[in-house]
Image (cartoon, rainbow, N blue to C red; front, side):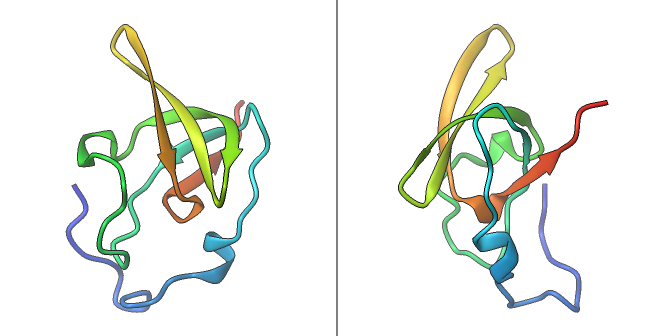
Length: 86
């Protein structure tokens, strides 16, 4: 669980992370940005990986497999990190 940020990034919202673009089918990791008060998703999905399904407004709909069930969450792009598959 994340509790604090690096001293150089504390209090800042990175505009490049805020406006990053994802396409459908991209693999992403959910990494909570601590500068925003309410991330809009449960903290138990911190660190999970999923697939971008579509864009909804400024956010993205991400599908995550929770054991055997597939769940969808609406996550802002600040909290997403793109993963390149090998």
